[in-house]
Image (cartoon, rainbow, N blue to C red; front, side, top):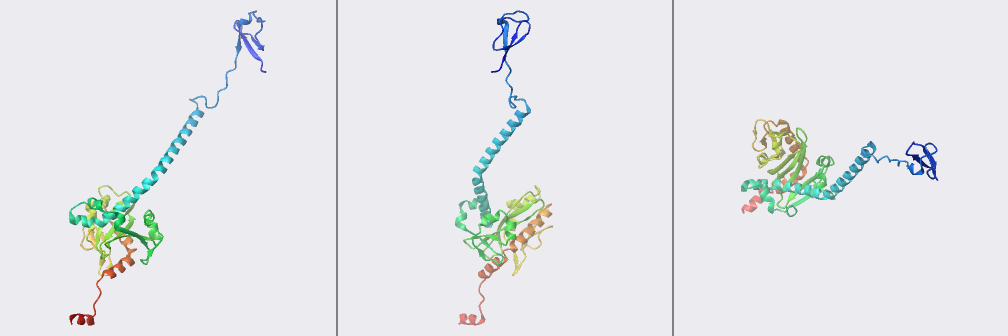
Length: 296
């Protein structure tokens, strides 16, 4: 058992033992003048709330707690976020498909598609470089990285029940990626509508490609000249060929060039399919013998 210490309140003498002495050997003060000396408890590393150790520990704990809460929130919202992204893609596809119809009716495309169900109208599938249908591919997964899908020879396409098609397109603008959807009429030649978006084109200039007013300029343009694929060009200084050209964006030359390249490079991937569908839509040639028989 540790020896206790007692201090004389009169002279300060320190006595060690189990109890205070009857009298102080120095000043003869009685035992009642002695006070037991107790050792102060040692403070732990984190007992000082103003100390560096406590501050570091507190900060670390708070960071871990906040990070955990954010991770849980992200996991909880991931499904909803994915659903929102999917719905936005489906909406853009329908907007491109019905843009021309909306223009003819003098209404907003947003209003027109309110009564249209994507799942009831669209058959989404993937084709290869020969235009043949590929099974087992998720169309919307490929849309998440369309340049990589194109490089792998996988081309998502959306075919409406009335035989029109919507083709996803991707390219580069002045400051980053540009992308969108081009809808073609049943002749696989005439643009029914187009929806475009961008990563960060210049406000008031290149970002005009994302406006309904500018996109409406593409409606009715054609991508073939006879049997030759010519795409649609954004021409600086004004369109000279009304069938295949659109006025370039004023002050947005680089963005316009990027959109021109995007349309040509992306649509080229679908030429085998488009040409086969064009041939199927073309009226069958009637021979001279058949003409004579028909006349008779």
